[in-house]
Length: 122
Image 1 (cartoon, rainbow, N blue to C red):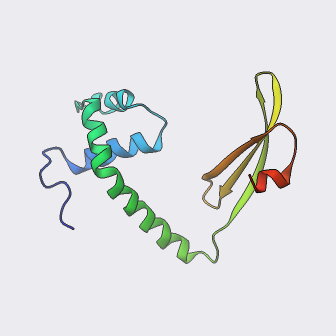
Image 2 (tube, rainbow, N blue to C red):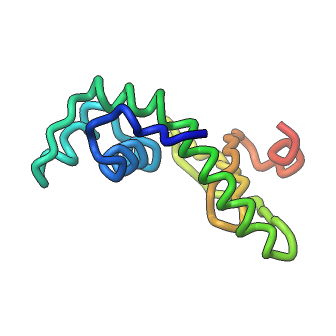
Image 3 (cartoon, rainbow, N blue to C red):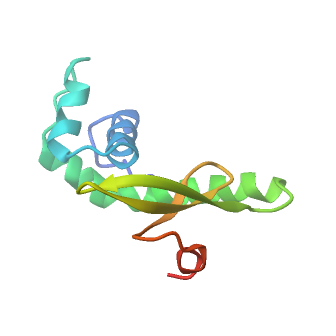
């Protein structure tokens, strides 16, 4: 595959930074539009959405390749189950989270009562 940025006048570093900010942090397109404005980069939220649709899958493939390469060096991919108590509408519930060896949450599950068996097999 050739250069995906070949017909784009904006720098590839700016596009990558903007798309990664949108993916990594829980921000809306309007909030991501405001972040690069401080250093003098004016980007509209429509452009950020277009970049996400066009370059997001390409960046995702690159990230997956890097993760697989780093995981292959490890003896085994691991995950563990965390239990946290949270208050929802004044009632205490159990929040079960499956977390991988990098600290990323794979899945979250809320139960009204403490039931490990249900959390492992939702």
